[in-house]
Length: 330
Image (cartoon, rainbow, N blue to C red):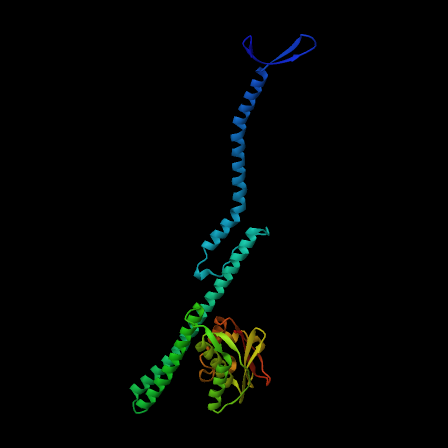
């Protein structure tokens, strides 16, 4: 109630007899306290929010400064500067992990670009050689028709044309395998493919052991798997001294196709490199003996596309043994 113009809080209590105790307390102090608190809140809350915003901006900005440096470094890396790397901070936190991941990605891009440049260079060299041979014989036949006959020139053009065709077809197949397209997967009897290669090589007068071939079915493109086995067989014949063996052995959930020879074998240091494109070992530098250097690369690509892998180790005769591992199918 209001007493003499002042708001007061009144409390009453009955006591002994007919008496009542009445206590009135002025509310001016409470009003002043509330006004003071409201003023403090009106000033302190905006100041506190401003302080929190500034602190957050400084802390987040400092935390993200390494990210900005990483962004600037990556933004400046072009195709001809793939050797550059992002600085890794010594904080051992997520920013350092991000920088390490970026450097790993740059390593892979650099390796891919280097491999692509080497591939283009090797392909250009392989394609240039038959063309140069054709051009040389054509120029010789034109300048000295009495030396080179039309039949000899036609034979050279035909042979080198077939070599060019083989290289181009191999390059196109590798491109298809890299894209993972163009394959018709179905159930394939791997033993039938192996036996077909044994018969083909025996018809050519070669000593081939096919006693280790057992029934096994895999899932893949029959044409590509046939080319894989033929590439391995041709490679074995090319390097053998007279003996070649082909085997198909199912074991557990996988089947192992082996092609081995009694040649010089593959040194341990070269066993990963021989599956690269246009790679020939020292004994196979001759183009006539060593092919174009794409056969084993194609075999590895086909094996990968079929869900398997291809390795090489020592054969029972000290030569090379190529082992194709594929998952079995019912």
